[in-house]
Image 1 (tube, rainbow, N blue to C red):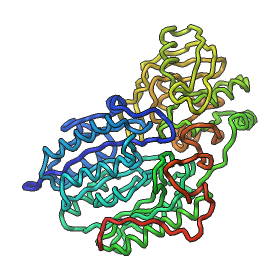
Image 2 (cartoon, rainbow, N blue to C red):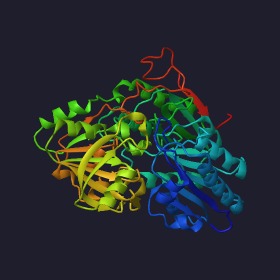
Image 3 (tube, rainbow, N blue to C red):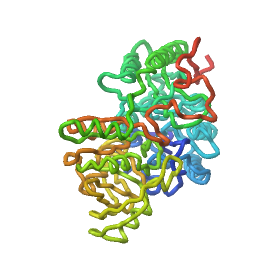
Image 4 (cartoon, rainbow, N blue to C red):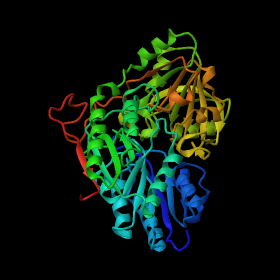
Length: 504
């Protein structure tokens, strides 16, 4: 629109794990996605692309800031966050005055010396643009939504699907909310209500039958009725260790604070009522292998949730690999392990060579003992692959120098870098195919449902040590105080905690 100040668009996006994983350095963003200024117009997918699409369609000028995203890991180092935050704010300052700000965030990022990255960033942006410029941000629905985030944003809009398929459309929704606010069509008032429930994402799917699917369907049933502009349901990322963690609901109304509070509280109440259903049954690797052997055909999925790179784990666990080797399964099996030194040894040896090495728990040794083994290098790779969907659809992934190390019938994909598991692109990039395997070790609590739909014969959620466990009953938090589920099975008199961005 001519004569209107531009809308600023930017992103600092990742999910962090304060229970384990490697610290996240700036190099991790450079390896995955780090674009500046006009470069962001070339972004092929995700929430930022959705924002740009709507801004262009409605003919708004755009002030591109910084787009930085990477695979989850440990908290950002202070130097990494300072560099990203400073550049985004400097670019925003140079673009002033702006009509509004759109930010694509995760909601569960953290910094070693700043617990709540998104709250800190939103507050800094608010200080730069002032109280009257609308700020709208997208979030993953695993966000740890804080009072600072609610206080400093006009609208927070979460993804609606898990497995995550709607980053693009969520970006579009956010942009439409911002522009409708600028044009006076809506006057958003936002309320967040949450309860202290900490569960993994295993039963957090949003389609078909399921406890969180029911909560999400209820939340979305409210949208578009009687002045309700937007609703979100949150299944908090439980691998942070911060005060006031929990999940629940967020409602944006057209100026009706009381309705926003009432409906958000009802979403949170329903979420609390389903807490027991959100914890899955779990099996030891040995028990799961025994059960899998008894199943005709394959693949049988061994879901090692506790080592989920997509949740910030290092990806270097060999608990399930050890169990497969101890069981002498004698059937084709696929296992991923992140181990830079082992990958380098395989590359030095070359294809066809036998190598003896120590594998696993080199990056985050708190969770188990390395495995000493001998295998044959059957494939080498530079580690490049392309995501076929999800938040980085169409973008390149980078495992770094990688190798397939075959130990009898067990084929281990040894990589240098952790990468996010959307489907099975990593296996396929090195010629490993699940349809030819009896057992496949997968390390994502949800996306295996998408990757192996119609192919897997069974899936077993494993009980192994790691920073992204399937159930949270053994986790000891230092900063989160009781009561919370599952440490407390019941909390008499529980009332959802409510935050609003309205003084009304």
